Image 1 (cartoon, rainbow, N blue to C red):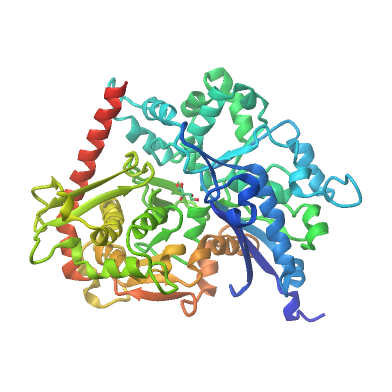
Image 2 (image 1 turned 60 degrees about the vertical axis):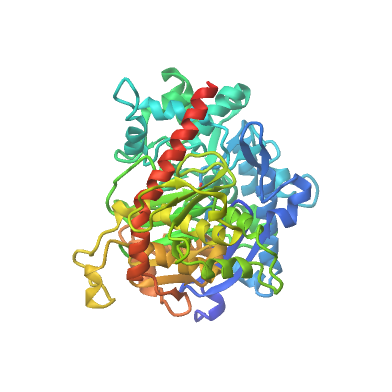
Length: 610
Ligand code: XUL
């Protein structure tokens, strides 16, 4: 039979993030043929007591989600795909599935895991004539019903021990740097090593009963496979346990997590092997999905990865291109061949290309913090809830400097404790001399208003990104043609293109301020499926995983040949503006100084409590 359109293979990408499970299906030519989603609050909020996808225990700083929620969401997303007009046809043509998941989250499998997962390969556990739902099939599979979420901040004690573990001086001062050199990051509350260590100490029985620990990415892959999937080479870097220069588990950090050198073997078997190849197939989909939803039995499960690594796969990125992801968290991502770790940011293995790395900054106070500032302004009357916020952003001059008030206004707006820098919740406002950042002083209350706050919070988020990404950007790209004008090579150090993804990428005022602060020699672009970028990256990864010629055909080669900017991206801001870029440059030092001052004050408060 000639290969008719309906026989062409399709690829499914999932994104199991904090608040939703999204699914997007693409054809070999990258055209999107179907998409759907499950919204955790809307679909399951009251059943599981969720707020914004999670459960919070403020007393301990715990933030977590029920594993059963994830399982119900997987069933529901398949049911919704099947219910689409073209659903049955689409599901029967899916040749591979990959996807992205919230990073750092972990799932704890118990004694029954292997057997119950294997049942999915037989089509699910037949308790009656009806097939059970996934959550019933896997009811005995977990040693703990909760998965810590990346917003969890219950692990300060464990972080202190991780930060000290690899120090070479008696004062332990170089510990965070040494930890970053080995694992790509200093200690962070959400990183899985500290989470596992806390679980071992707080619930020793749970830890003892745990037979395997999955990241959310390897958990979803396991469910689809019907067997325990290995962790992925990029997502494993979000644990503070993987030695990136040597590409192996770090023995001293395993020992710290496990509690003794004798316990390391047991922890190794709980973690399992890590899959070095980001592509290829890990096996065929479990029969449960074939029988229940009509997925093709030929469908292969490719390695899943984290949502940020998957975001850099949503389009072919060139050196010096940056992605700003404006979701629940705000992240700033770049691809680089240079491993230059530092305690204030993260390096991960690239999800598909050995020898390349992903540089990442991650802020907890992203979209939700902007919403809080928005809600201090009078509510917008039309359909756009951001209208008044955006007007305030655009009506306020750069750094709030006016003829009448020649002071630059800087602030930090943290509604929950922040990651970079590690500062508890609070709002701080300062002023300084706009010409050189001198005279940094806590601001008088009248120097700021809800209107200036709107611009300042966006400027503040962008200044933090500019400050920390400086070591990675430079003023020209050796050996590369810059397709802007010839002067581009002499522009000050800045990203080449800035791509916006995530829900906030639809906001034009945010795009403009990001362009003004961060530059972007070739402009600021929005990815058309901005809200679905990581699911799309997952779908492309599934495609590359099975269509690559061999292990040597890189993701960028394969996807780069098929990807066209038309219809995929839209220029939303000019990016680099010499005058504004210089103005923000003049206060960058003051912004750094403001953060250092607040950090020192907060540390003094912590010390006083000890
Ligand atoms: C990254 C991080 C967040 C989550 C969001 O380190 O914690 O961006 O991945 O799902």
